[in-house]
Image (cartoon, helix red, strand yellow):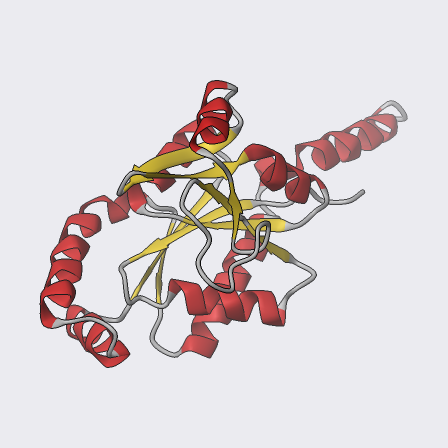
Length: 211
C-alpha cells in the first residue's frame, strides 16, 4: 500500500535559509519531495518558466480560482496575487510525494486551520545577531532594507509557538538532515496509519475467536 504524502509548510525569517534548505532537500531526496508551485498574477522575470517557478495567470483567472475554492491559500502583495493551487498539491500527495510549501506565517496558520494534518515547521538562525549577519552578508540590500527585515522578523516571531516544529539552521547539512527526519517520522504517527491499524485489528480479531 502506497503511503499518501504529507503536506509540510516551511516558514522562517528572511535570511534564515529556507530556500537553500528546500534546494538541498530536493537535491538529496528528489524521489521523496515535491516543492509546491504557486500561481501568481505578476509578470514572469527573465529566465522564469511557467510551471517551474510559478504558474503565471491573469488577474481574472486568479479571481476565478478564488471563487472556485481552487487554492489552498492566497494573499495579495503589491497589487499582485499569489496562491497555492490545490490540484497540483493534492496530485503530488496522492502520488506519495511529501509536498513542501514555503510561505509566510499568516498563510501557514490559515493552511493548518483548513488542513489540520499539515505539518508546520519554522526555520530560524541560532540567534538574532546571526540573522543580522546573514542579511548583511548577502550584499544585495541596503541598511534600511535590512533594518526593515529585522523589524519584520520581530513581528513574525510572535506566532512561532503555534508551529509544530522549530528548527535551527546553523550548519546547513545538519539542518537538512533534521528537516528530512522530522517529515519522515511524521509518517509513523498513528493517526496517519488508521487504515493499516484497522487492518491489523481485524486480522487479530480472527485469533480472538479461537479462545
